Length: 193
Image 1: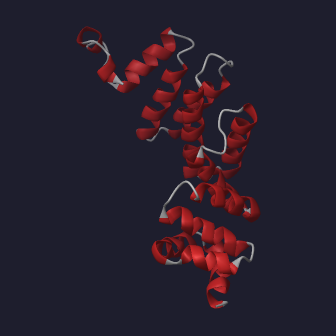
Image 2 (image 1 turned 30 degrees about the vertical axis):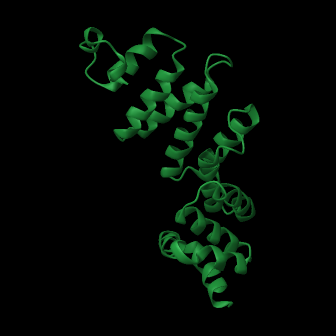
Image 3 (image 1 turned 180 degrees about the horizontal axis):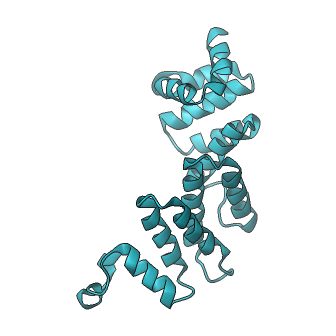
């Protein structure tokens, strides 16, 4: 943020927050500033204020916000909401973004947030499908672990065991320790060998 300014102009701003707050206040269509200010606020732990800025960016008129900025706002907002268990809101934001064409199936990191939200809301089949799509792009033990948990919840034990092998096994243990509601189905799949 601050590296883009000349030394002369830099002296007026003490932080990324003051820079982006100034730009948002001066230029009403500075949507990138809304999104960046949201990120700064989120890093400071001011999640509600950050979410307000992400939502403001998404509410801008079509044509005033680049697709890249909208995607960033959707990703940041969905991640922030996910972190304080607002699962219904995560799903709503992602569904709205899909409807408007701001994101698509190639936005695996955002869809991953949606998959986790569906899993914790109890929509296991939808979560399983989304994890299948996202884990094909996101190669991580965490993605495989959540995919295993979703598969176990809908009785796909062979698939769940396949996803639980290797690097994902420790993560599955952590997931069910954090959310015991998933443990019974996972344990049944493990015992079903």
